[in-house]
Length: 298
Ligand SMILES: [Fe+2]
Image (cartoon, rainbow, N blue to C red; front, side, top):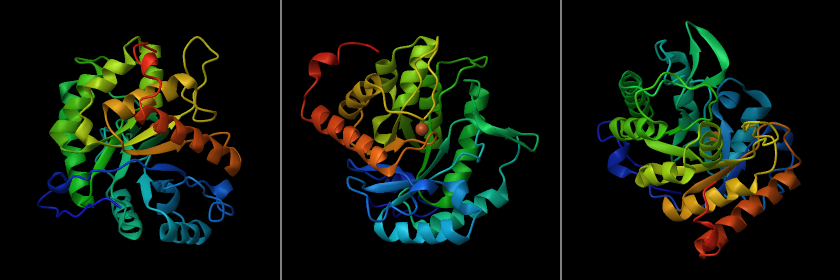
């Protein structure tokens, strides 16, 4: 487990974790019965924070058992860190309790908003890439990170609508991370999907990210059957994303990698097989295999 010691006063940056390469999957209800006996290749589990903050009973029992076997990373979807409503204090107190329970090295949510005027959208809505949005995010991320006392990783989302913006997505992401003094959960599939849909260079985006702030990756499947790419998290990872992941490992570093499969959740065996492909991709990339492909842009 990485060292995460740090007081509120010091802030997490004084003891910023240096993670090694580990592989994980999401702890999902269809696998509650099996995962404890069948977890070959799994080093850690990610949970959707809200699924365990608000429910007792079986999910809590499963979580306690899982915590005895694996590091657990809480990954939220409802914080709405970029939203215009005040931060939900009840939500934050519940998240803090969850963090105290599972003692993760960090926690994460998305660089977006998911509610406004008290209405939850149940979706991740992109922010305008503006100085105003950066300033708003920075003070809210600092507040949440200080309250939790461990690194807060914000994740780059996939998006289809582009808000009126003053800077690029990469510039916006860097500004937020560096000024908030927080971490980045770099979703490699989202970079690929956005780069294709919005016409930018995925590898240039990866190159620009502050590598020392990236503590975790996401890899996932997307639907490429239509005129634009759809980030579904509901199918196998496409080779183009494996290639970008291999590039990212060498460029950004060896950090915890989470296979996201949230829709059309497969059997545990299929999920473990996909995780083995992620591991094999990492092994080959770090051994220098596939160098000849690296010049090709997605
Ligand atoms: Fe993700």
